[in-house]
Image (cartoon, rainbow, N blue to C red; front, side, top):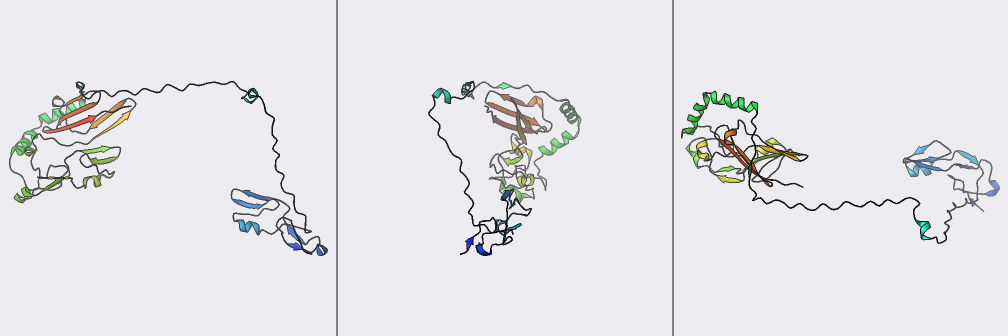
Length: 285
């Protein structure tokens, strides 16, 4: 009668009458699984494939063994007798920590509060630049050109986002597709306040088609109040908010910044005839 060999790595059936000293090739060690590698503790071969692990040939010869190995002993779980509640309490001194009281919501101030003028500090570099402009004789020539009603061929449209140039009387009848808002640059994103199609690429921002139709703006005289967009940005550090407006050669005597607890109104006159307006709502925690 053929018996089953229980030696690790063998698993063959054998005849007890022909069971010699070298009839069985097996592993005397135990399986080892570590860091995805599989092998036997008795030999050095390791593999990551489980099927390959099962086919590893034994490293020791001996007799076949028909005795089934005992099952691993399960740890005995002993039930404890019912203990007093005082014995079950942790054996250390308790410290009770009270949670802080919730912060009461701060009521937002009214936007109708009186506005206050913010002090304007003029840097030395701006003073020097304005002095040079006042002494320059080219300013008067530029003003004469702007006062003229003649539109020169090649003059660019002054509407934001329009790249058309004046080519003659037919240009006066063309429909202008432009952005009625102002450009905004914030945290790496660039977009127009009127349509808010955001992009991080400056060339893509410049190529964005306008969202408003109207007439071309060929001369500064046609601009009325001469309000133009300016690049502006802001950042916050601690309890301070810094707003930057990029307006070249601004005129402090004609500019004004007023604010209250919830609103900030910026009015900047720069480069002689240009004006920038921006109203900002202030928020805080």
